[in-house]
Structures are given as C-alpha cells and as structure tokens.
Length: 443
Image 1 (cartoon, rainbow, N blue to C red):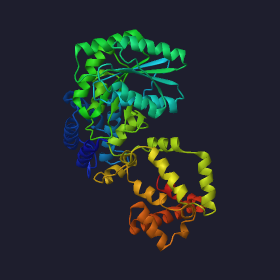
Image 2 (image 1 turned 30 degrees about the vertical axis):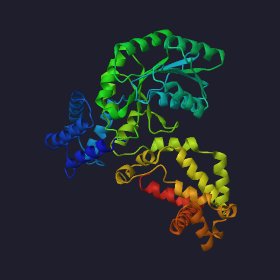
Image 3 (image 1 turned 180 degrees about the vertical axis):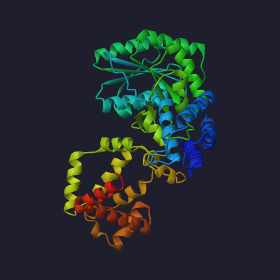
Image 4 (image 1 turned 90 degrees about the vertical axis):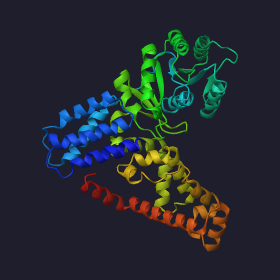
C-alpha cells in the first residue's frame, strides 16, 4: 500500500539528518523531494504545491524538541498535514432511516458490485443489520449474476427483476420488499459506464431522486490516480454524494486518489477495500493512513483486526493446554486460521512499524500457510495432539502425504517447539519480565 510514495518520502527526510535545526536552506531541499514524491504518486500539482507550502510555513523557525531531531520533527509535521489532506477525522456511515438506503455509484470496473457485497457483509456482521442487496445494473449481462453470487457467499438476499429495464422502478420495488420482509438496510448497486456520460448521469440522478438515500457513496478504483479524482468531481456535481470508497488499495497503488480526492470534492473517504475477500473492508482513518504512508505502521488497526477474531472461550482453553504442556498442532492450526481471517498477509505486515519497509522486496504470499496446513492435515489425530510422538518414519510419511519434504516438516516442528516454549514462558513469570522490558524501552 503506497510503497513507492513511502520510499520517496523516506528519502526526502534523509536530507535533514545530521542537522541541528530546521532552516530555510535545508527544508527547501527536503520539500522539493516531498513535492516530487507527491507528483509521482499522481497527486494534483496545485494540491502538492499547497501541501508543501503549508509544511514549510509550519516547519520554518520551529525549535527542535529535545527528544526529536529535525528529520523526526519534519516527519511529524508532514504526518499531520497528510492527515488533514485526507480528511482530518474518521467519518462514519449514516444508518438512519427505516430502512437505511445506500446508493452505490461509480464507473464500470471500479469494483462497485464487489464492494456492495463487502459493505453488506460488514453491516451484517459488525452492525447486526438485516441487509438487502439490489441489482439495478440492467445493462451489463453478468452484473446481477455477480451480485447474486456475492449475496449467496455472504448470506444476504439479493433483489432483482430479470427482464425489467427500468432501474428506478426496480429500486422503488426493492424498498417496498425490504419493508415487507423486515430488512433495515438496502444497498442499491447501480450501473457503471466506461466513462462519464449524460445518459448515465441522468439515470443515477433519477434513482437518487426516487429513493432519497441516506447515503450516496462513490466507488473509486484507487489504482487510476488523478483520473479517479476527476471522475469523482463529475459525479459529485450531479449527485452531491456523501462519501468516497477507495477500492484495490492492496494493489500497486500510487496514492494520488487517496491524497487528492478530499481536496477536490470536499467529501470524506469512508471505507477502503484491501483485498479480494468479503472481509477485506476497513473504515478509513486519515491519521492511521498517514502513519502507514510514512512507514510508521498502524498498530491500532492491527489490534482491532486481532480483537475481531479473538475468541475468549477458545483463548481460555489454549491457556489451560499451555499450562499443562498439552498445546498441539490442532491448536496451532486454529491460530493460523484466525490469522488468515485478519486479512492478506502483506497488508498485515505493513501495519507493523518498520516491518513494511524492511520486507518491501519480500513477496508475502497469502498462500504462505498452505504448506503448513497441508503438513498438519497429513498428521494422525495422535500426532497432532502429541507432537513428541512424531519420529523419523512418521515425518517421512507426513512429508509424502502433504507433498512437502522432510526438511520442511523438520522446520515446522522446530518452529512449533520454539513457539510452544515462548507461550509457556508468557504463561509464567516470563510474561511479566517481558512487559517490564518493554516498559523500560518506552513501551
């Protein structure tokens, strides 16, 4: 996520290293590199220019705090300005109305239909809402089928009228159906086009007037950069939408859309898509995104994802097993499955301060756990519950059954033993000692 921009900003801050204060001379060179990094990320020239001007005004003449060097102080100023550039504060979704009507808009290929499903899944699982998805794309042959597949995947009803070519009528009928069946949220997936055109704008404007939605959201493919911002402006002029959704942030995103869109349309980014899975949706936090862009990680979001997968009862069982030295491969497999539910691995690593930069050239595959799962699934129930029973002949059989090598099985056994020892230590006094060490290091 924004790896190229992060690298260039990091290089820009190196200019200030070794200086005892921030002056007009050394800040000018740094900001020249910052502006260049923003332009390379496809940020609008005027926005990039105004951004560096504000940073310069805040930086010049500031006393360097005793705990900060000039480079660190500049990073803080840039982080604060990036946060403001992307909206300043987190803006939630309006769930008023009975039912709440959410109108999805955007160009074809922006990921609108898929994100409609992700949003439905988010509202169903996180907000306990009874959601109805509505297929109003009557032009793209596979659009309604795609929505039905998504709906079946997440367990959400999809309303469609095959053969009806009037999206205004379909959306009105869908709201009646929602009221009759006790649905409290209606998400209307509208038709996209390959480019902004008058016919498309008139159609979605008519739907908007007919259903009077509580939320009108514009879906943007973040990989399209400045073009996405220009399209957002055209849609906003017609719809006056409430918020923006950025999709495909897990790809090779330059960052221009995320950094520019708030300044151009003055509407908040509300959600981001971070992967292909239905769970790959995050509320957009400008401050956290600024920290990630600057290589500071996003520990808060990482902890929140972990908490979502945390099962208190399961954790108690594991603690008892660890205390009795009964932690086995079945328990290990459950831990892996919980981690996988948290999101794609590269995104998770990027949330750890410093890890994204250190592992930027490492290809972290979402299938990285497949080999481990195959090895564990090739074990007998006894071998999983009693890892010490696995001898050389058993390892040979496990390797053959899982399509791996004896060396890979040995490596997993070694990693498992190390993790078991660490967990055992955390159960005893070792955990307190570790916490004291961390406090001594500043937390």
